Length: 185
Image 1: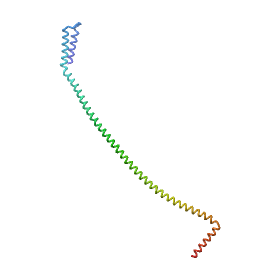
Image 2 (image 1 turned 45 degrees about the vertical axis):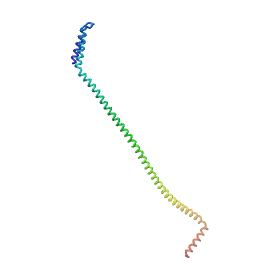
Image 3 (image 1 turned 90 degrees about the horizontal axis):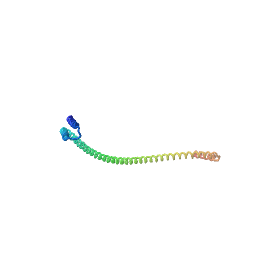
Image 4 (image 1 turned 30 degrees about the vertical axis):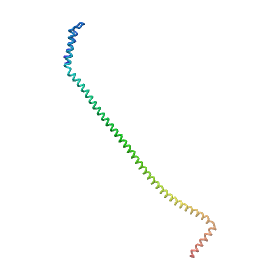
């Protein structure tokens, strides 16, 4: 087909170039018109089916692309809708988890405060007991210390007083009197 079209084109070109004068004769114009009509007829006859098929394929591919694009658009819209729904569900769950976390934190805070209060009360009780024990111990030690000091002071006073001769005489007399009473008794 390509050879035929090339041959007809070359033949018409040689026919036109071979005339050699400036004017156009009616025969040459008719010949040129027939060449053009023959060329267009041949192109139409041999090219109608392939060109028609090419245009149909092109049209079908455009239609198919549009249908696919429409389908993908609808799928994307559905996925977007699902994603929005999942986002809303996730937000609700996040709010529920946040609320639960706050409630749990409050409960734990109350438990910790109650436990701390109980421990504090136990510590206070232990401190009171320890203070009372230590206070009693200190009282005993103080009393013992007081007795020891009183005894030391009394001994010192007695020793000072006993160094006096009058006191010694009175002591000896009192002791003799006691011995006599025991002897008589």
